[in-house]
Image (tube, rainbow, N blue to C red; front, side, top):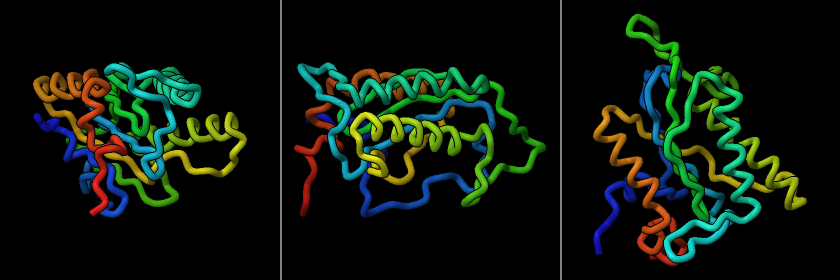
Amino acid sequence: MKKNFLSSYFYCDIHHRRNIRLDGYDYTQAGAYFITICTYERECLFGNVVEGNMQLNDLGRIVADEWLKTADIRPEIGLDAWVVMPNHFHGIVVMINGRGTARRAPTTEQFGKPVAGSIPTIIRSFKSAATKRINEFRHTPGMPVWQRNYYEHIIRNETSLAKIREYIINNPQQWELDRENPTNIRTD
């Protein structure tokens, strides 16, 4: 079996959580970022993969809708390839008019002090909006939908961008091998 080249990097293991943001990196600067967000306890909330195609349920459609709204309400970003999977989400965010420059001090987020227009703030807002709508739909106020935090990878060149796009597009066809598929999670 061929292992997906990105699966180990983006494994959403809540027991081995670590800070994965680059120290001193300005997450408001122009560029492309690969984002992975996992559901709380890897629960399959958003639909099913059927014959290699993702079939979104109502909750999955809420996630897709909120992702599209992310770009609608933020003119500083664009969305590239993305996919809602049964228990996680992958997307590429492109910061179009980043405010970071070589002469500018890095923008560092601190607890309780979000930086407007930064990747962490954008993702936090997306997760919050999707959670609110999902919990309203399910009549489950306060229930977690997402795992704490998210994974991000700074896309540094066109070759990497092409590989990540391909990974996202092919993710449903690879579901049977995906480490996030609950049937593949080892408990030993």
